[in-house]
Image (cartoon, rainbow, N blue to C red):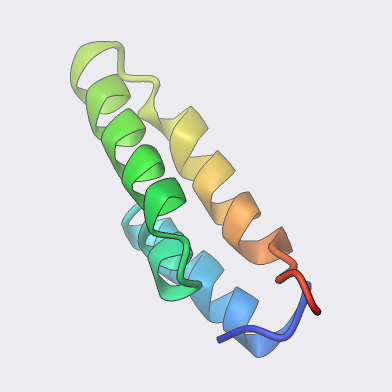
Length: 70
């Protein structure tokens, strides 16, 4: 979907991760990372109220993602 760091695809992915951690990674086609972010955020929000750490990590990860080019 995205062409590189700063692309419109990354901006959309970062916005999606702002609302639901991992959703931006899912849009970028990174299923395992999306599941990891979503589960970690859910666990940390429900137990320690530290889910905001994963939430911010998810947003930054989606915004700064660079697809490997061949």
